[in-house]
Length: 121
Image (cartoon, rainbow, N blue to C red; front, top):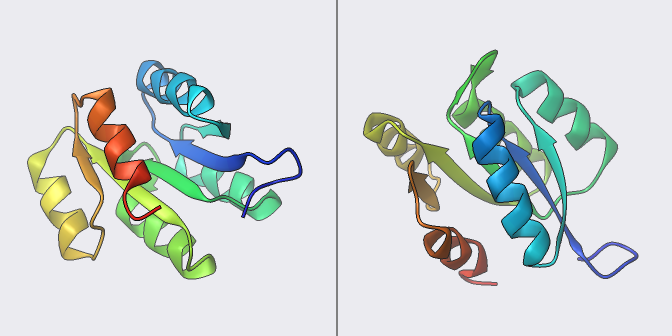
């Protein structure tokens, strides 16, 4: 489902401003309208105010667990595409154990991100 301008909406949740900005630029170039959050609390506020098609979510966030956040967002929107991101391989394993099939380990290749987003689209 696209918004009024025909663009899909994405929410980036990453405490690294540099990585979030990089993902924002790519998603915008790929046709998404993007909101950016750096904490669980801010992500929940964004999610309450709008409908998203895609969430890129870091696992380690300053105020909570990204896996828990992504699970809650997925329950609220069953069609939500979630990509879990972490520099820690154990976090990626935990995310997969919780059922998240789209996971990226930092640092990641932007082509790899695009492939995960477009998968099953």
